Length: 120
Length: 185
Image (cartoon, rainbow over all chains, first blue to last red; front, top):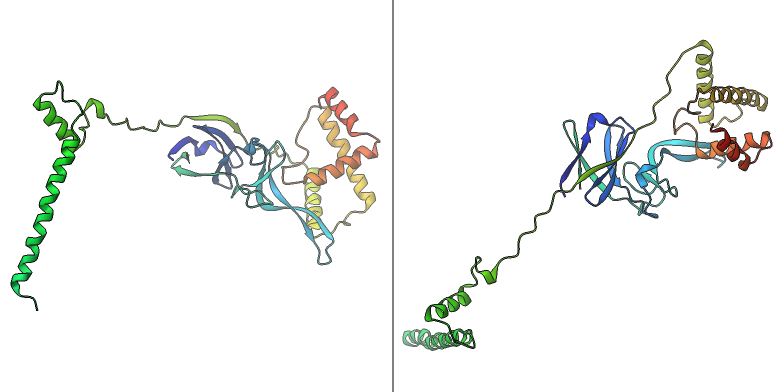
């Protein structure tokens, strides 16, 4: 495992991402709320490009005390969705939103000055 | 009671066993000799025995060490860059400012679970006006995302409204698909 240079931090706006191939691994690097996250671009469902779909906040249905709906609302948790079949992963952990045991391989991201490295 | 003499005798008794070990080593050295000594000089034999006892020298042709595998540096290739959607350019006019304030009030009502902030009649009027305005802009080439970002409207909300709009004008999803492929809008 070594640090692999993937780009300049200034080239990433918040919400941007980059798909890189490092050796045999294909990795999606996200910038979200100022932090970098990197995951395997190989969906655990059927091998789709997990990091290339929509990024969308988690949706929850809020309920009143009597269990009637207050409508669907977005939460602060950001997810990314595999474009093939809609497998949805938490941006900060790489876990599937409903089944935490399903987890994408996570890579460490190191920033040194303006340089961004993925440890792979 | 043991005398000092008997104590000294014990090490002496051990000596024969160490002496007995030496012939065993000699025997193993003899066994390590090649089966055929033909063509070997005395120096070759000495070198052979030395090699057997000390191990094969690293530079010996028959004992080359396997080359140490050095991991090649991994190739980094940037495949795709996906940019975050850019927000629409903000232009201000009195009606838009009023609409923004009104929308914010409605959002606040919705967040508190108040779905009846607008009467059905008011909702219909607002929906009709917005539908016409957005479509006219799109047909005129002034295209912009219909909602601010991906966190404005859920997929369920969008499907419910789309379905209701299609039903209101008696259209099927198939017809929508055909029209989209013809018009390119």
